[in-house]
Length: 220
Image 1 (tube, one colour):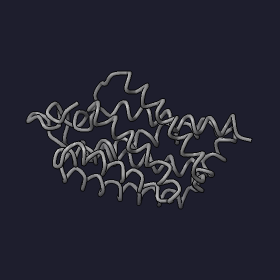
Image 2 (tube, rainbow, N blue to C red):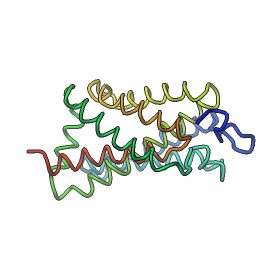
Image 3 (tube, one colour):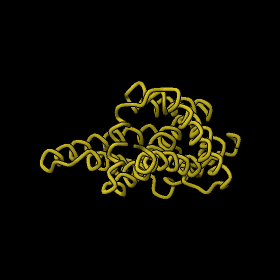
Image 4 (spheres, one colour):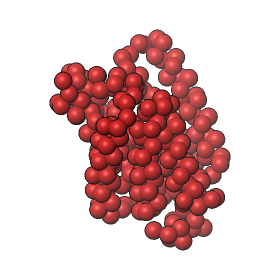
């Protein structure tokens, strides 16, 4: 879909502004500080920590776009898209994930997550934290807020590249960055092609869900 048809540039739809991004960062810092204080008082396992981290990210996104009112969902590209792109994206993520996993080393952080998933008693919490909450929050941040802000200023191609690189860099560990970078570009392409966050979000959920279920039922 061409930039001319992008609803973000219509005059009746406000794009993601720089102030919205700053508000997101401020909200994230405040929520993160409160979460850190809570964790010191109430120790949790890795699943609880990550779930709280992503819940804080979701809250920060909501607080950042709250002043936009009804303009927030379309600005974040929360709109319908053709199911074919969601199916294509889901299959593409699985192919990329399996291929990259064979080629490169397994990141240490991912090993810890997979070990948790192998504990059947923690399977449902693991699925919720890693296969639902994490993908939704990451898509809202990188291909919602960040992509929307960049696209309204420098176009969708720049938004695709920068948001994909930022998404990969946010995983910190070098092996993990290399692992998710191809996925980031696929998710970004889906976002640009459909002008919707739905296909990339569905694909991201499928990818993470497949990883957790594979660890639970196919490992060892």
